Length: 164
Image 1 (cartoon, rainbow, N blue to C red):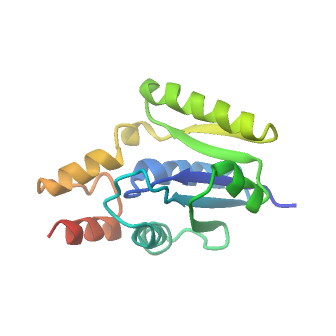
Image 2: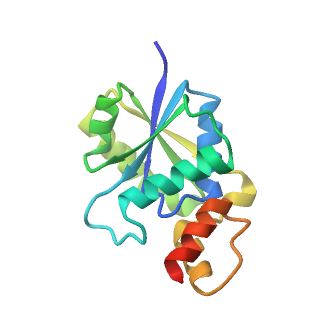
């Protein structure tokens, strides 16, 4: 039986921080489901279809990750329901700094209350990517800054097209 992990997020857009978490998780699991959240209470730059395409281009075109090991899906349900759908009991979350921990700790606790068979695994990005956030990447590109160190070529192209 293959070990599957769920990596949920908004990925608006995907960054090298997200990609670090995916790379590290591929060493631990047979398959990763990248769940692109599409809950309505968020103010996204890209719609869910665009975000899925951006993630796929970044992972499979730019970085040439193995398509057999990663599934990219949109979801509007609870993450625990996504786990059930893909028969996974592992939720992956990335941590950048101590400031992330309190929110992530509470989220992990709530998911555990919803389904006590689910464990949350926290992974750190490499040091050079710990400062990257999607919010800052969008702000930098909007103001005409260089974001080559923060995300992939195809993601940069999508961002620039959005702000033109």
